[in-house]
Length: 344
Image (cartoon, rainbow, N blue to C red; front, top):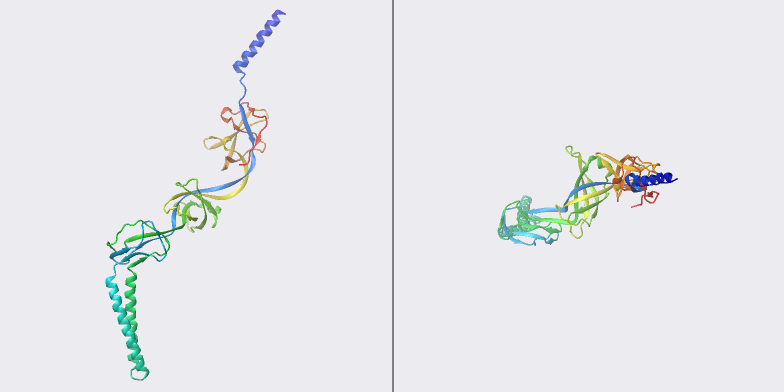
């Protein structure tokens, strides 16, 4: 009897030793089952902001600047005078041309009156009519020369910084000021030709500037270039953004997101996905309580979820504790039952 007790004691000590040596419990993991989710595929691009309208004003003639009528970066109205060039000689020429035109008109009226009473021939009347028209044309030409020396804003907008001063001589074609209409912004960007099927005029976009990453701006696609670049196989798209506070500036770089198409798919949390080169895997718990690595095909991401194909609807996908398991290792499920993936 004493021998049996001794042997039993030795067996108990051996079991406790085995538990200490190799009786480590399987890792605890959290699992979920895939759930249907509506995924929206997005097209992302980078674009450059452009003014709604922009023009660089220049002089049509070489002349001295008499007056500049805009402030650096100031707002100007349509038709507002931006610059006035010297026009002393032109004003004198206009006065002379108008005087000649007035005199020719009076002479024409006298000749016409004489012709009506038979004291002037028809040829004389026609000659005086031609003289009057020629004088009027000369006056109009003088007015046009003066108009060339008055630079006006063709539309309302913001003037550029001044780079020229009053009294300077400007050459024909030299820039005087740039006017930019910032009431809305045109945003040009390129996308692969394969994305054309997902784009249409009027489609909404979201644009974000690096200066205001937390304040995205909504806009719409205005037009799609009918020509594809044969070198890049890309097409240029132009969107328009409202810009009431003129926060967006021409030349800004913006990131663009376009909601292209929506579809139903199976979703699991992104944290469940592991990679091996180009392949993607999840670990699922089988009926025997063992982890099995399973290859899947991933798709669109959305709010922490990722689209997967290749899993049965009742698969128990490991989301927490993935780093603790390997293919075929035994696991313990936290809470005992898998959770359903929560909607985002």
